[in-house]
Image (cartoon, rainbow, N blue to C red; front, side, top):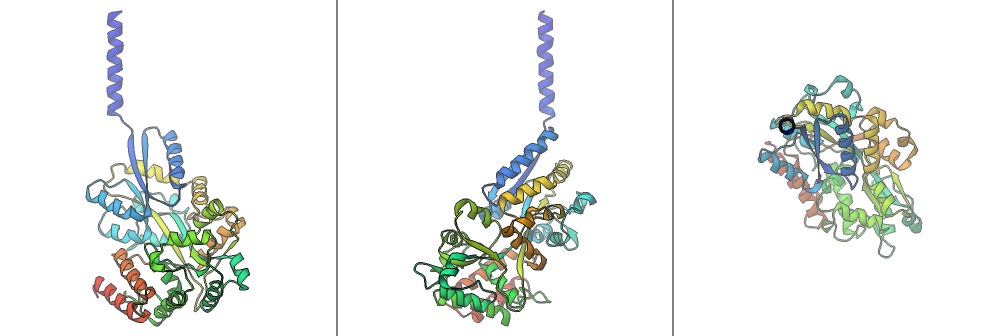
Length: 406
């Protein structure tokens, strides 16, 4: 009996030792936080994947977008890069140039690649190589408070001149602001690009030099400068972030904003009685919106690439992508999902999705974050009344060209 017990204990010790030596492979996956639903969505997907692959553990790390790039950069500098990450597609050039991420064609099957809307693969192609897979897409649109427009006796603007007129009229109402203009933190530059493109301008010319100080760029910035100077935006735009502006809109204080589809589920949850419509941007020379994608990239330092391949195949299943999009208010990146009836039946989401047909994308160039900072500073100077659009944009364009080696 003693010998049998000893054998059993010894066998148990061997089993424990074997279990420790055969620990599950681990995939560390970082991504930005789109909403409170983001973590839930990806942890559900990870749990389903682990149930089918008990020898693989998936660690989901969700980080606020406001400090996501800094956190990721710190991890990379400390030799602690994740296996895979969701990156803003405009970052891919920098990561690819530094040799930090793998070409995706070495990791995925043709069958997986064929699942995507072809145009949405474009922002992930760097120097002819696919460096990421789109996982989230967004197109921008104008959102108006129907009650405020009705009270002002106005209809939503179709042109930028009409935007000036409607904003002026709506602002006559007590404690109400015609147009919501973010002047700090994220997307100060993005609001400018909406108008720049609509006026027929471009961010860079054919030689790669900054084109923001073109006549079209100056005219676009002048629209916002006039709105601020006339008091037809919320007070002190440079003290208001995008989220501040959105909160004012949800509280019924702003007539018009430019926004993304993620705001729709927020309104339904936080301001269900808000009477709003989603419409295309005002038009000057051309109808345009901004398309934005975020992409999954795989780091070269990952020692779990076979497991990552399996996980990529798993997360790009139709039901998972549809559930994620609906929870976070994002647009599809896969053909099967865009054809789902929900994108035709939900008029709010359809209004954003329709913009993908004529969307323009931010350029994928190195040092883009620094270019954003220069552009943002120039616009803030304009909104504060410290410089004219022409002077501020000319100065900014010169700084951008110097940064890019021209």
